[in-house]
Amino acid sequence: MTLPEARAAGRPLVMGVVNVTPDSFSDGGAWFTPEAAVAHGHELVAQGADLLDVGGESTRPGAERPSAEEEQRRVLPVIEELGSLVPVSVDTMRASVAAAALDAGAVLVNDVSGGLADPDMAPLVAARRVPFVAMHWRGHSHDMQARAHYDDVVAEVIAELSARVEALVAAGIRPADIVLDPGFGFAKLAHHNWELLRRLEELTAVGHRVLIGTSRKGFLGLVGRTPDTVRPPLGRDVATAATSLYAAQRGVWAVRVHDVAGTVDALDVADALRASS
Image 1 (cartoon, helix red, strand yellow):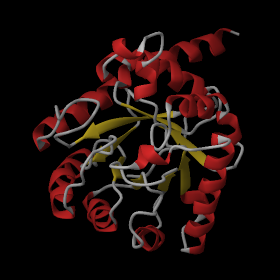
Image 2: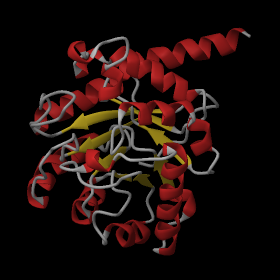
Image 3: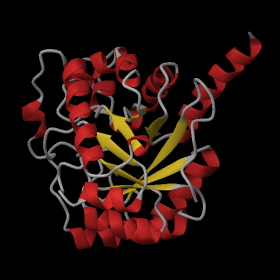
Image 4: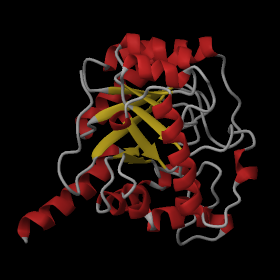
């Protein structure tokens, strides 16, 4: 199965999130068993997901890493089952996990470190000739928020991602296979996330496909709230749909979301408005 292209202008692909972790910030490990994760994947596809992103390592702030063996144990059975349903991405920073996932049926590697966490990742992706999501990253979850210092967050994220593109191409990855992700919530404070979202067209103008993942992130929990009344992750899906629609109108290739139905509804409304004009 191959990776689909965006459907039309203003209509990005919807990537549904399948967390196979016991400590996810967004769903608290609700889909930790392979059976539950596969059932959830089927549910997301029924809701309109164009592809699924399967991950076995939580990247929430402060999270500890599982072993590579444990990460593979979590994701491989799920990818094997879901890979015949829709295109599947593996969300991993480890080349060994990515290789096993590609063998199991994944068609895309989504690396939140952009290939920085494992020097074997870029050569693997180059050899396999598969699409690769390079996210903006400044370090692992246990200390990444300490690195959230920017003079101009948009300019610096673009510069750092551009440097990653140069390194990835030098390693043999085809430019057309590189997808960029600005890394909402990763070494970013709330005002950094809003600035990145507001100026998203500066990133899409770089020339690579762009994936955004605002889904259930902490900065959305603060919208219209005081610090002591922050919305919990499951209460951020309407805000997620709103930011996904905003990103769609600015030319992103795909939006990565936990609640597929809400985002699909928002995109359908925009399509209906365009059709009526």
